[in-house]
Length: 158
Ligand code: FES
Ligand code: FES
Image (cartoon, rainbow, N blue to C red):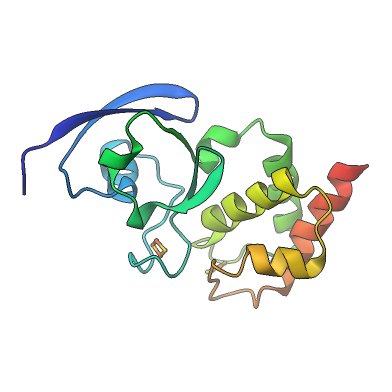
């Protein structure tokens, strides 16, 4: 492995410096170096969405993103959104609707759903399905997750 280099980025609102190899992915850096564990390593190939984080306001697959490319950027994970009203509503509705079973996909689902509701406060059901189409869940069958996102949108709009 090539020599590690220091990279500075903003993680959940705080400046962090982390040493990583040029080929290290953000997912590896988050989980192995920074011990931020909500982003999961599923396929590690950009397919399942379990590793989704938000970079500069957009959902991104952290397994396909080099840590070196995050230098100077704003990275958000579920851990950094504990006071976020959209995320809190989504979490509540996910639990109530039965959208969380094993929980492996949940962090990535929440990131994608949170980004949708931040941009489109009252999305159609089809828009929710489309926004979550890159996130694979092997447990729930998706209906409960879509119900949860629609329920959260409704609550937030009141
Ligand atoms: Fe990144 Fe599956 S682990 S998309
Ligand atoms: Fe198990 Fe989605 S709740 S993979």
